[in-house]
Image (cartoon, rainbow, N blue to C red; front, side):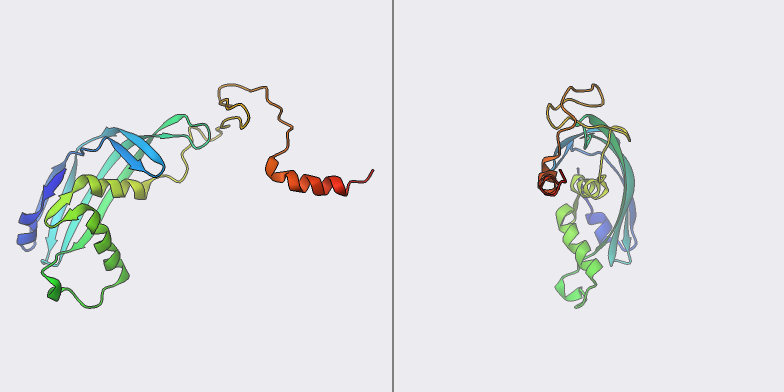
Length: 184
C-alpha cells in the first residue's frame, strides 16, 4: 500500500493517522518464500516534527508459516512488529548539515527502501521490520528430534531402523588417530 505523505510534509507539526492494509501475501528472502497467514490492518501515526523530521510509529502482528529448523514441519510464527522511524525532511541539499552521525546516515540509507519522494510504501516498510524481527531459530517444539540423516524420517513421528552406531563422518580423522595408537 502506497501512502501519500505530501500533506504531512507541507504542514509544520502536523499529525495524521493512517490505517494501513498490507498487500503482500508472502515474505521472500534468500532463505525462501514464506506465506503470511494472518495480517490485520494497523494504524500508522505520522508526525512532522518542527519540519525537520518525520516520525513514523505503529505496531502490528503478522503470522508467518516457517519450517522447523530441525524437522521441516511448518510452524505458525507470530511476529510482533514495532515501527519507530525518524526520517529527516529534505529541503534541498543546502539545508542538510555537513556532518551527520552514523545513525542518521543509516536511517537515510534505509529510507531509500520504502520512501519515494513524498510516498511511503508501507509493504516495504513492514517487510524490513519482518526481516529485522525474524527469529534466529524456529522449532516446532523444544525437544524436536529432527530428521534422520540417513533415511530422512521425521524422528518426532517414528523411530527409524537406521544404524545409530555409525560414527559421524566429520569425526573420522579423530577415529583414525585413536585406532593408530590403540593398545592391543
